[in-house]
Length: 207
Figure 1 (cartoon, rainbow, N blue to C red):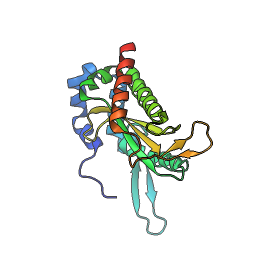
Figure 2: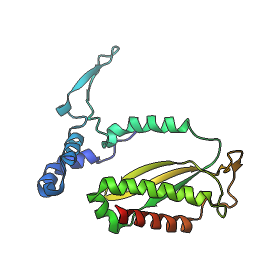
Figure 3: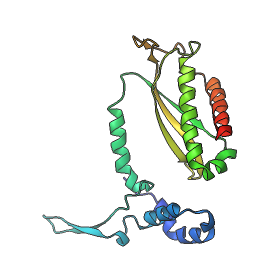
Figure 4: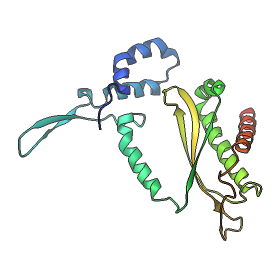
């Protein structure tokens, strides 16, 4: 795989300390540890080992990884293992991908109240899927799904959202047979949006 011209670690190494000095007032100790771990990842700062070819005696240094769960490099192997395990759980049916996201106006609230907002995001999205899928007008079945929280977007800005991977269909209420969707789409997007919005706002008011 070709190495990109710039990696996240390159940017952190060049500007990380200045960023910490400028924005240190709102950075937690965990933020600082992550930034410094990513900056040191696979560099001499973490040590390494020497690999030598037994045939030609060519030597190459491999530096140690930081193994921080936020590191794009270190996460690759763990991600691949996780994906392989999930693929073993797949049912012999099609799957849909549904994303529940918060408006940008609430990003600041989520950033300052991560535990509450992220938990509510999971609960509201799960409850929405189960409720709408159980409605006979839409599917009339019990569904299962996998939810994954992403806290930033592709531009690396804070943007909390939940990805849901859902089998196409579900079990009948008595558990005796598989219920197939009656439409080409799985569940109506407008209904999902309306129900999710109501559940999230109600939960936010109670928090």
